[in-house]
Amino acid sequence: MDLTRAALLAGGAAVAGVINAVAGGGTLVSFPAAIAAGLAPLAANATNAVALTPASLASAWAYRRELSRDYRVLRVLLLPSLLGGIVGSALLLVTPQRVFDAAVPGLVLLATLLLFWQNLRPARPSAKGGAGAGAGVSEEFALPSRPWLVFLLQFLVSVYGGYFGAGIGIMMLALLSSFAGNVDIHRMNAIKTVLASLINGVAAIAFVFAGAVDAVATPIMMAAAVVGSFAGAAVARRIEPRKVRWFVVVLGLVLTAKLAWDRFGPAAEPSGAACPDSPPQTVDRGATAARTGLAPTSSG
Image 1: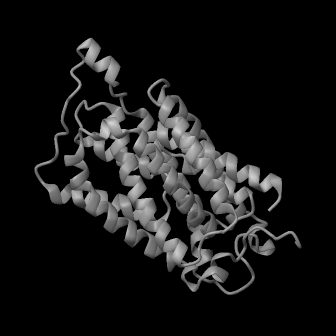
Image 2: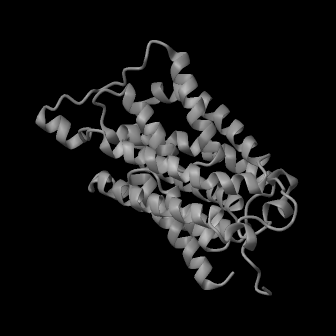
């Protein structure tokens, strides 16, 4: 892999690590970066999930102070997250490349709209502002009286996360906000980070065993994302997450338009750019199928 592609992968993953630690939605940066580096969409998605898992764990460790207060909420949400991640990754592994290519613009748009909707919600008080100003920041989450509903909603979010992943943090923040009252945003972000680590981790294991990831791109993205996550968690309490999220919304809309044009535009079918000429294949056929359409080697 040449330096330009390596720089694209590393840069996209590092920025994604920062954004995920600060606001969520970083996959909308690392996913297009992987495609720009030459990976096919399906393989880029699998590689991205594997590469960002250690970064999520790094962010979770950075938020350990906030997590120490919310083990009860984590216990409620861990099982549906695990099961949903398994189901979502299994769905991806049996999805033909052509079908996934066609679905990607819609998936990116969905994640972008979720982030847009989250941006329009009223900002929650921070730990500093709430405690010091008497803003009434809650100490505990108000878990719903119907735990099966929480289980179902988190399971569905996790299925989406195991399948695609972009915007999963936004979905979970929206779910946590529905029963968080005025709980500090950083505590919700900490819980979201742990659950995202679990979902991505389950999917990553499945993708690795299925041979769905790119062996060259993965370590590059993984190292850069870990650095970005530590940096993002360190500065998350000092910057305004909403500003970062608005930038990602714009990026997501631009990416959606580009992906849709590449897949459905006038030149898409004749050029065969959206899918290789070979018969449709699925990721679970192993490394050969997963790498169909990946970045060309040095021999061209």
